[in-house]
Length: 392
Image (cartoon, rainbow, N blue to C red; front, side):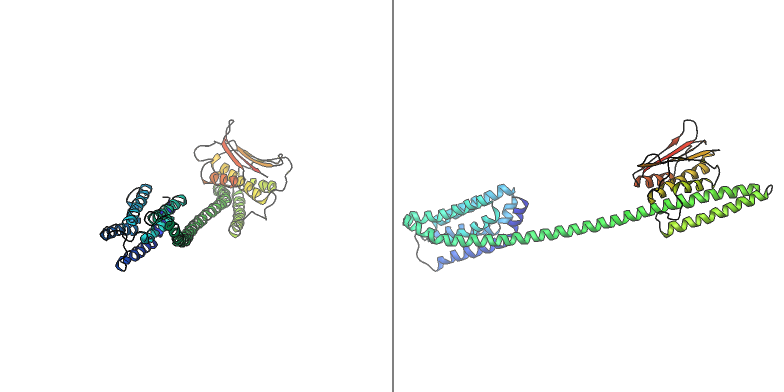
């Protein structure tokens, strides 16, 4: 049997046990109230034994079927039960008046068997009953019995089909309820995962903002303060200018923090990208050369923000790690569908620290979210190069 058929079989067990018990008791009870026997009364004990076995197998049918392979055990069960019924009907002293004892097995077949096999099972049992009447009382009596038995068979079949449909409907509703509960559990789990993922992404975004913004300014401020410390005894005026520049940069860093913490969106107060990169380049040493290829054009705020942060990261790495004496920053607007940012220096190149760490990792994440790409590595002529390209 299929899992669905096994479920139907288990569901119909109580109904089947009730039907077997009730019908068998009623049929065998007639022996105590009738003396009209058509076979020797000595057959009554044998009929009782067969009936008891038939009823026991019917009531315990679920356990009996589950003892062996489902298909083999089911076929064996119906063969045994049909054999018992055939024998009882032919040896019963009450002969044809014993026929309704087959109805529980007809009903059970509708629960257990495919439609074609259930029809064959019912037709065989009806045929056995009619054969008893035909052999003992003539085939005219068999035709009359067919009319009478048809009503009881029809009622049993109709009632069983209605019951089975009701049980199937309840089973489907229960299955659907369980599926809905399972789906709700999965949705809750997915929602929790999505919330965790969104939290992680936002944390990464905040980390990138802090690193790209505050990290850049602090690098330049440290450079200016180191210069002031070296000049304070010999060239106090230059030291004072360096301190003033560091103070100005600190104020700009605070503004950047306010923008990031207040909105964590694209910067709306920043000038256009080309101008913003020029201002960024002038904040520390070495001051890179700026090259603009093509005509600058307005970009999507997210693209401008990402390219500005990329320029910050590149310049921070040059000033912090490269030990370069000159550098160049190039913005390329020549392609109408893309913008390219390149930074190059004549420093020591990638030496295990330059071009590594969280900065470039965060930069790649930021650019890849926009559908762009990041390339970096040592230059053949010496130094390090960083290239960013994004759709725009």
